[in-house]
Image 1 (cartoon, rainbow, N blue to C red):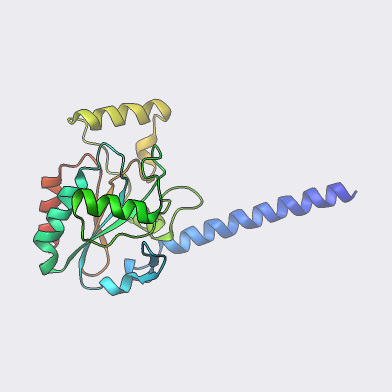
Image 2: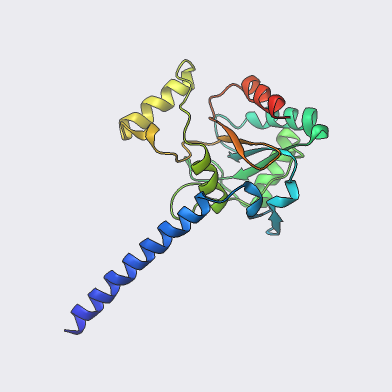
Length: 212
């Protein structure tokens, strides 16, 4: 009898947790703009996204040991060129894709500044998918679903084939697929475009310039 009661209570708790999680995700997804969120910087300090109000943002999940890691150089070039016009790159390291962002926040920061001379804000390492995904990325994905890889590009075609072999409908869910996915946010805090890792950086610059 006690075992049955325990099982019943456990099942009820799991149902309640699932309902709460769904409600939380729904609430996050329905948030009006990016300024409602608070994130952590590389030193673990709170950063209110409202601090960036009125600026054009490029929010990127990054990795230090990825084939796309050289995009750090192009991101720094964009930051240097447009920062004076109210543009920010917000770097969120993530180790969920091939474990290509190992090391501490300090290790990652040292690599980026030492290798690519980055000066844009770098946040604390986070998850972008799954139950532990940072709330800001839950919201970003809800605003701009997966846009598809550029399959005319060799790497884009490879990634598309790899994911499609795992799930033929992979492109229909909004999860982040790989490192260096970018979300362009306008001066009102709204997501205007999602740019996948295979999007040429020249096209990323065009989108940034148009938003400015």
